[in-house]
Structures are given as C-alpha cells and as structure tokens.
Amino acid sequence: MRQGSAAFLGWISLLLCCLLGSGAEASAEETMKQSENGAFLSLTEDTQVTFVPGTAQETAIGSLSAGQPALAYGRQDGWIQIYYRGMIGYIPETAAGAYTPPAAPAPFPLPLRDGLVINALGDSITYGDKLSDTGLAFPYVVASGCMEAKLNNYGWNGSNLAGPHPDRLVDRYPAMEPDADLILVLGGTNDYAGFHELGTPLGTAQDTTADTFYGGLNLLMCGLRQMYPDRDVVFMTPLRRVGYMRKNGSGFYLNQYAEAIRERAAFWGFRVIDLFNEPELDFSSRSAAYLVDGLHPNEKGHALVGACVYRRLFKEP
Image 1 (tube, rainbow, N blue to C red):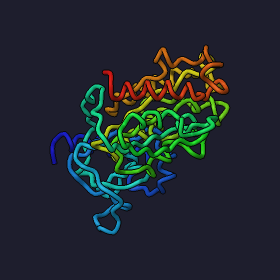
Image 2 (image 1 turned 120 degrees about the vertical axis):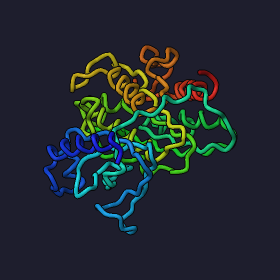
Image 3 (image 1 turned 90 degrees about the vertical axis):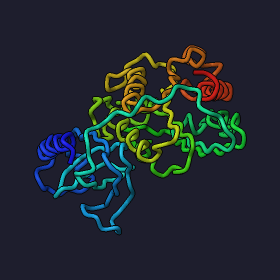
Image 4 (image 1 turned 180 degrees about the vertical axis):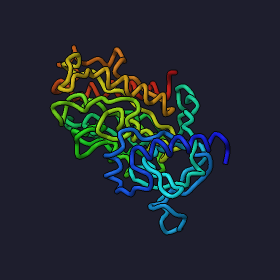
C-alpha cells in the first residue's frame, strides 16, 4: 500500500470509529443519520462496489474507476462503507485514498454534435409548470437547437434539491438515462422557499447528508461524478424570483443557495451556468412580462432562459 494511502486510512479509521464505533454494524439509513460529516475520498484503483463487505460477485452493485470520488460513512473488517449512486455500498480499504479534486473542466462552449442525449434534472421550472404546453419549457428550447437531440425531462413540480421533500433531486437522479451525453441540473429555488415553509437549512460545505443544502449538493455531485465520469454535467443556479431579497424561514437568502451551487461545483469539478446573475434573466422586476406567478416563467420567460442556456453551452465562453 502506498504511504499516502496508509496515512489516509489511518485518519479515516479514526474518524469513522468516532462516528460509528469500531466494527459497529448499522443500516444504511441509520448510518446516514449518525454521520454528521462523512469523509471525502478518491479511488486509487479500479474496484467493484458491493452490497456487503466481501468480494462475492453476486453482491456487486457496481464499480468505480481509479480517480472517481466517494463519500465514506463507515469501516468494517477492511472495508469502507460509501455512498454510491444513491445507495450504500462497500469498497476495500486498499482502493481508497484522500480526495483529489478533479482538474478544472474545460471552459464553455461545449462541442455541438448531432444526436445528443440530454438529461434535464430539476423542479417545476424544468418541467414547464404553468405553461399551456410543457414542450415550451427551457430544456426543450435548448434541445431544439441541437440537431436530432433526444431530451429526457426529469423536472418534477415542487421538487427540492435536498431537505424535507419527498421528491428531491438527490433521490431522483439515479433513475436518469445512464447513457446521456449532457446532464443539466437546475434546483435550489424550492430549497429557498417552497415545499417546506422554513426552507432547506444551508448547512456547511462538509455536510454529507441530504438534511442540508450543502449536504445534498455533495451527495448529488458525488453521485453524478460516479454515474457520468466522462460526460458533460452542467449545474445552473436558480433564477431570481419575486421577493428573492427576503430571508427565508431559516434565515437564508436565495443568493446563498446560488453561491453554494457555484462553490460545490468548483469542488467537484463541474461547469456552472449562473442564471442568478444573468442580467437578461432577472425577471423579478419584470414579472408581468415574464413570470406567471412571481416564480414560474411564462412562454416568453422560458424562451429567454432556453436561449441563454443554449448560448452559454454551445456559443459563448
């Protein structure tokens, strides 16, 4: 074992023993609740991820390649319990090393080619709620500029990214098309003010449970890194909405959720389209022209959002 890996495992053993107790067994749900801060790690070698500690082929639930990330939650008999694509699995200690941030992604624009498969993950804005035809929502505007593109729209009305919501982005992403070329993620406005009247607590950058917005971002971004290691994953910050300069019930502003997305995307190596700071998309003072209800864009609003996203993706740096 490399010296660096040995030192890392000594550190993670101490941390995880403090969290769970040496050799303690816990269900995935119990472990996620017990672990206030999991450990960020990177794989030092290709390895299978198993449902239980051990190498039996029938217990394999997937695999990770050297350099891919994981979040560690426990340790048992030479195995590390990790977060893997929305599940809990195990990898051998020998395959784990300290987290190495990925290289900064190449700047926009992305190469545009025919036949792109696009996954759009988001809330009611991605879905196209309040439109007479959901096919006018901004993801379809983006896809319409890509010759023969296939769009899978995973927008869901009212969906939070994290926090107390039954249809969170962090829970739904594993069901997306695994062979997509481009993954667009827009969330956060409902975490600011939506399903839960207090809003999702912001938390800290080290959180690794979906109880907080930062924790949900870490889980979602780690999982997307595992699921799409060589594809283009692009996060977007939420649009400004009527009343966005007020604190929510937890004491946070919408711009703090936008900043969390930018910050965590840099940590995980994802590109960001900053819709929050796009001057042409500040509909908060022009709600009559571009918003239906102070939040959801109308057809004109979606056309502007889609054109902006397309331009940032494929036309401008």
